[in-house]
Length: 121
Image (tube, rainbow, N blue to C red; front, side):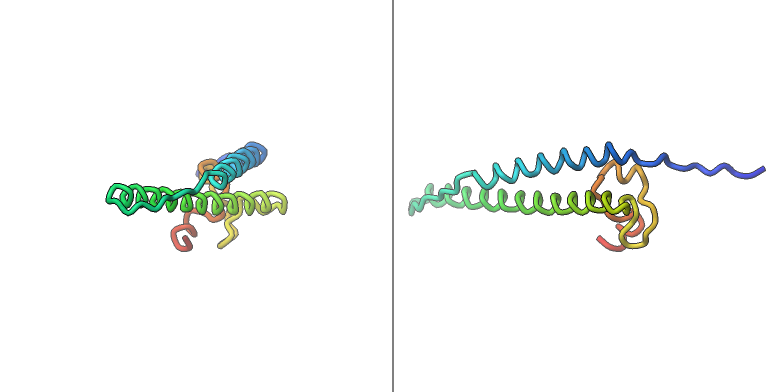
């Protein structure tokens, strides 16, 4: 008697595509909000003024970092959408094996299988 092989169900590409498009729209909105936030840092020589300025500079650095992360995620999403158009979505960019449906469900923009992700961050 042969052994049964458990296989994962195929990913729902329409649902994953919609998730990517929704997240893309959300990131674009966040990016617009980040760019429209006023950047105003007053120069004040007092100790309190200097502390406030350092806090404002730290806030600005955090906003820039957040903006960079948003841009990186947008790029990953755009690449995933391109792979969907090309018919290569769900295949690892390194080894060309299938990416596990559960991995795609947790991050639809992922481009590598779990094995290759450990070797090629």
